[in-house]
Image 1 (cartoon, rainbow, N blue to C red):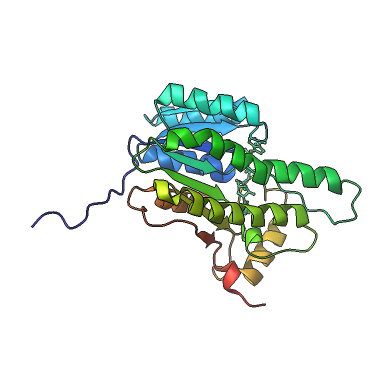
Image 2: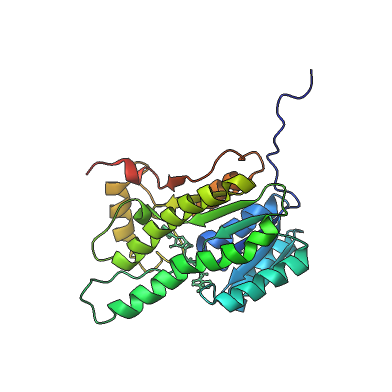
Length: 259
Ligand code: NAD
């Protein structure tokens, strides 16, 4: 009798592009994939944070390179993706993680500008990276697209409408592209993190974080960036070949609560 399992649980040698890799969940994702032997293209809007991440990966004896790129700039994204492919010889996994927050009410004077920027970075940018990556993903044995949405992509919080709208958009984009690209064997999934300790949530005072987590999550705590990154890795495995179009909460049980 031959081997029972035929699908690999290794990303060793795969090329993964992670946006927003200079902080938080993107940084943790870069570490988790590099620890598993993937070649990491670490992308962020500024050089310094991704250079730091790449140095840490290189010091551990793994492979990574940094790219500074504003993912909302389509031309810059095209250029960056071509440069990644020239450096690493292909692209297997795209992790769309870069994002910004903006909590402000509808009648705020800054609403129009916040809406435009949040939609551009948190949603439209994903279409830039996906379109640029597509010709290269098509050449991969196990092409994967993983988008980082939010529990705000499944439910809503008052006074956060640009962010909530963008994250609902990420869920919709994921589902539609899963159908569009499925015939080519390209899987498209998204993760909906709950409250995670990252640069984005750092300004929230500790006591407010603890109260929120105690009241809202089953696990009664904020999550850590690696806890999301490990789920991203699971979605990226060659073995995850029949999983597409899903939006999975990684939220300590936040979305199961009725009130
Ligand atoms: P973070 O602020 O620690 O990291 C975000 C990274 O994205 C930063 O390094 C930032 O420089 C980069 N970035 C922002 N705009 C960019 C642009 N235009 N081009 C390139 N890079 C850009 O925040 P995080 O919490 O790790 O956020 C990662 C993702 O997780 C985001 O999409 C965020 O919306 C989502 N998210 C976060 C939480 C949370 O509680 N922290 C919860 C749900 C979803």
